[in-house]
Amino acid sequence: MSKTTQVTVTLLIVTLLLAAVRVPTSSATDTEAAIKALEHDLGVAVRHKDLDRLMGHYTVSENLVVFDVTPPRQFTGWEAYKEQWRSALAACKDSPVFEIKDLSVYGGAGYAFSHSIQHFACTNQQDKKVDLLLRVTDGYANFKGTWLIAHEHISVPVDLATGKADLETKP
Image (tube, rainbow, N blue to C red; front, side, top):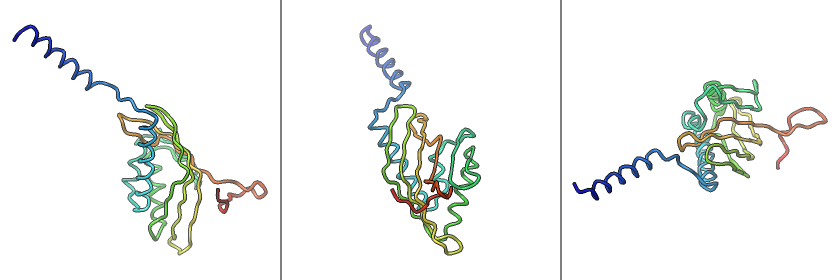
């Protein structure tokens, strides 16, 4: 092998190695598109009552923290939140309505945040209509190119006169 061929092969190998270990970067547009796709798929999973698909969008970690509107209001860890979703989906006799509106995403290559208005409705096991309009803020972490929800905060407005949740107000 000639000296020129050896140098060319060496440069090719070094280039391939650098490409293999390169840390992927993402633009704000890529981040926003990926998170919007995640949120869309989360909605599909809820509507199909596909618990495994739904929970595939959360970090499988004891560090996952979710503040929800239903007791116990704070869920710590993936398993605890999975049980919350299992109960919520089982409480619906029909396929739930799940819509995400006004989704705003911002962040960088490693972490991002979003806020949205989410509508969840179904008929419960007692044939009562459940219809919730929720304010949701999510914190995401990028794990080797995959965005996952690492923190979630769900809330509803409060009627200050009564101190009770205001489930009727629509944005």
